[in-house]
Amino acid sequence: MKLCGIDEAGRGPIAGPMTVAGVLFKGKKVQGLNDSKKLTEKKREALFDTIKDNSYYHIVFTSAADIDEKGLSACIKNSILEIMQNIDAQSYLMDGNTAFGITNLTYKIKADATVPEVSAASILAKVSRDRYMCELASKYPNYNFEKHKGYGTKAHIEAIKEYGYSDIHRRSFKLKALEDLDQQSLF
Image (cartoon, rainbow, N blue to C red; front, side, top):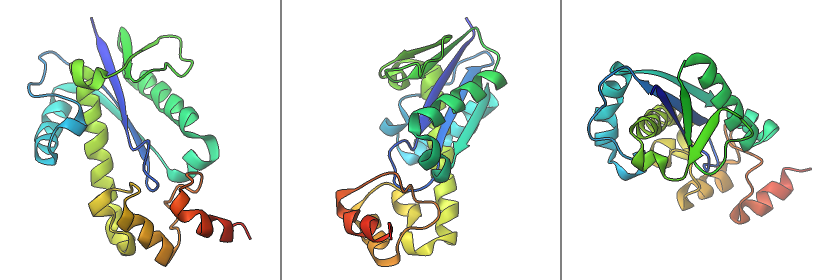
C-alpha cells in the first residue's frame, strides 16, 4: 500500500514557523528511523538527505503571523491538505489524535515512533524547521534562536523581556512569564 506519513514540528514554540512534512517512500524503506525527538541532531541530519533521496516528500512552513491569525489547528489542517494535493498516495496517516476534520486522513498516537513513513516525515519536518531557525538567528541575534529554536526557554523569555517581541514571535501564545509585556503591548 502506498502510505504517506505526515508529522509536524514546531507546534509549541513561541517563535518561528510550524513545519509539516509528508513522506511516501519510493520503494525501499530507510533504516534507523524513529521519532525525531528520540534521535540526536547528528542522526537526524544524517537521515535527512537519505529520506529525501528515497521518497516523494512535501514540506509546508506556516509563519507565526498565520498561526496567530488562523490558529494552530487550521494551519495544521491547511498544511495536511497541501501535502495531500502534492503527494499521490492510497492512504495518509498523521501522527497524533485527530484527523482535523479531513475525511481521508487517519491518525495514530505515537505513529512517529512506530510507522516508518511518519518517522521520516517527523525527521524532515524537524530538520527543516531547525535549519530555518538557525538561519533566522543571524537576522535576530538578540534571541539566540540557534540554541532553543524558538521554544520558550528561560533564556528566550529573558531575551523577549529585554528586547521585546520580534516579527517572528507568536503573539497568540500567552506565557505567564510575559504577562506584563503582553499587557503593555495592548496599549
